[in-house]
Image (cartoon, rainbow, N blue to C red; front, side, top):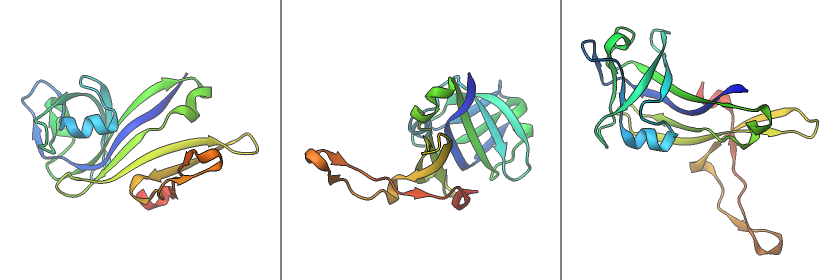
Length: 163
């Protein structure tokens, strides 16, 4: 089994840091649902401002609030306004890797979703792996294929666009 990225909130901004709370990170349920992050799920948080990396669990805040609140000991690692990456993961057999399509959301300074991305790993002709980032906003419209079935050709964007 391999630990693989399952979903990610990339570049969300910390809205509060509450040292005296029990622990965890409080997130907007809308963001969690879109990225596939569950309540009480363990996540990793990477602070883009300080480089700090922590692990904690998710609790849900107010729907539509765009909150990202670090609680308890986690509050020592982040300040309001810091940009963080919040990532959940799953364990999968290597053969399942190509079936996993992690959802990634990117954010503006007010924690509104800017991009809705999907990570995709495929097998290439030589039997190796290829990686692409599919951007819903840049996906060409569906077209009719052979036999009349609907075919979509997601447009890939380069990882470097988001690093």
